[in-house]
Amino acid sequence: MKRLIFTLLAVCLICVVSAQIMDRSFGGFRDEKAYSIQITNEGMLLSAGYTESFTPFGNDKDMFLVKTDPMGTVFWFRIYGDKGDDIAYSLAKTMSNKYLIAGVKNLHYDDLRAEFVGSVYVVCVNQFGDTQWTSIFGSPNLSFANSIKATRDGGSILTGVVNQRFDRAVNGYVGYLLILKLFPDGSVQWIQTFDWPSALVVGTDIIIKIGGGYFVIGYILDQMTKNYIALILQINDHGAFTTHPRIYGGIGDRIFYSGIPLPDGGMIIAGYYNSSGPGEGDGWIMKVTPEGDSLLTKRYGYPAEEDCFYAVASSSMTGSFIFAGVQDKFGRSGAFFVKTNSEGSIICEFSMGPPFSEVLRDIAVFRDDNYVFVGSTNSYGLRWDYYYVRYMF
Image (cartoon, rainbow, N blue to C red):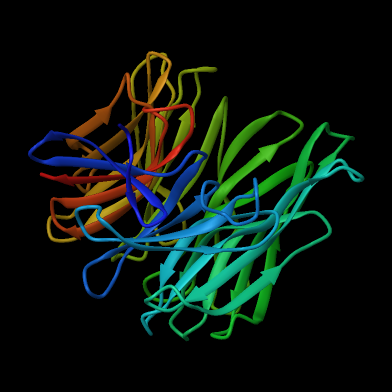
C-alpha cells in the first residue's frame, strides 16, 4: 500500500537506496510539487510548492508549506490561497525568523481574452506558518515571481515576469523581466523591468552580491528565432542598472536557473545548455566575475539526453558546489546531482532512474557532505508527489 496518513497529509517512504541516501514522497490523489527549501533556526526544514489534493477549493492549486525534520517526517503543513491556482516557486528566510513565500496568484486561462492571467503573490509567515502579511502585484496579463530573497534592510526583493502576453505578430509570448523591491511590510518600494524586442524575458533567480547590489539571472526567449538566450543583469540597491546586460547565446538554447554569490563578488550559476538539437541538452554551470563576465563554463550530461541543473548550493568548508536537477535517461527523467570542486571538476555524481521519474528543484545544505533536495516524483503513480531526498556522503 503506497500511503501512510499523517493527519490529512499522505506520506510515503519510498525506499532506502543505501546507507547514505534516503528519499520520501508525500502527496494525495492529485498533484503535489516542491520548488524551494529552507533550514529553520532549530534545524528543521520548510519546503514550499503547491498542492492539488488538499485544497478546499475544488480542482484548484494552492501554495503549500510543509515542515519536516531532517529525516523527512512531517510535522505540519499549511495552505495559502483561494480560488484559482496559487503556486509557490520560492521560499526565503528573513533575519527576524520569518519566511517569505513567492509565486503566482489566481493563475488561470481567461476565455474572453484567450490569455493566461495571474499576479505576483508574496506571503510572509512566522515560524509556525501563520500569515503575517500578503502582497499582490500584477498587470493586465500574467505576472509571477520565480525567486525572492530577504534583504539587509528588513525588506525583500524578487524577480520574475510582468505583463506576459501572446503577441500574434511574432506568434509567441512576450513580456518583461520584473525586479520588485518590497518594504518590510510587503508594500512596494521600487520596481524595475528589462525588455527585449519581440521576446519573453524571464528572471529566474536574484542573488544578493557580496559588497552590495544584486545579480539577476534568467533568459530571453527570442520569438523571431525561437532560441533561448541566457541573461545576467546587475542592479544597485536602488534599482538602477550598473552594467550592460551580459548575454550568453548562440546556436541552440542557453538558460540560467539558479545562482549563488562568491566571496570575490562574482557568482556561480546552474542552468541548461543545448547546442545539438532536441534531446541533447546538458546541465550547465558558469562561474562569472563581479561584472558578470564568464571565467569558467562546464557542461555535464550524456549524449542524446536532456540534462538540466535547476539549483546550485555551496559546501563552504571544502569549497565545493552541488548542482541538482533532472536527467533524461532512455526517455525517462531522473533526479540528478553533481558535486564539483571550485574549478568544476566532478568529485561525485548521482542519478536516480530509470525506472524512476523525478525532478530536483532546490538544495538545503546542513553541513559539508549532508544535503537535502526537494522536487517532485511520479515514479509510483500517474500523479506528481512532493519529493524529498537526503544524501550523506
